[in-house]
Image (cartoon, rainbow, N blue to C red; front, side):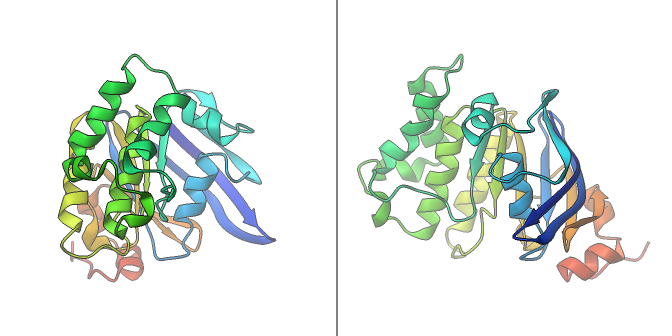
Length: 238
């Protein structure tokens, strides 16, 4: 599915990623964990073609995405819900969710894809005519993920889906992500708070200062001293 191999990325002369590698297999939920500034968003933006690596490559279904512009990456089947949501304030919820159905054609009809987005986040159904500027932070997160899902992607990149949300809204977003996972789609989720990680994650990849310091099973992460330093979670003795 997705293979990120030895990515090196510089931004304005500063090295942000140092030989980052990770893999997401079909149907997997992989969590990219790290403190703010560790390189999670840079990894996502490089996968989506918004940044160009100095070294390394990104492969999706065997295709090298090097040099691809973002619209082509999306049409290949990768949906992206950025940390800042990216909801268009001048458009309604309904219009935001519809947008990807115009840009990528799949075996599913636009109506089917839109219906699935509202099924995953049923709260949005009542807000279809509400403008993007009238939404709370949690509602914008839902719209952002629903819009990415309406692309009908094989892989979803979710950047900090729980960041800044009130405790009351986190369960709704978590349930939506679980529903997406249940549909068989692959998910790469970035998270800075270890306690917000989905319990059914297949693998954790932990970043620290642009380098991978752990890549393995969630149960093993709890026994790893490097993970404990990054996340603040006390390592479980082996």
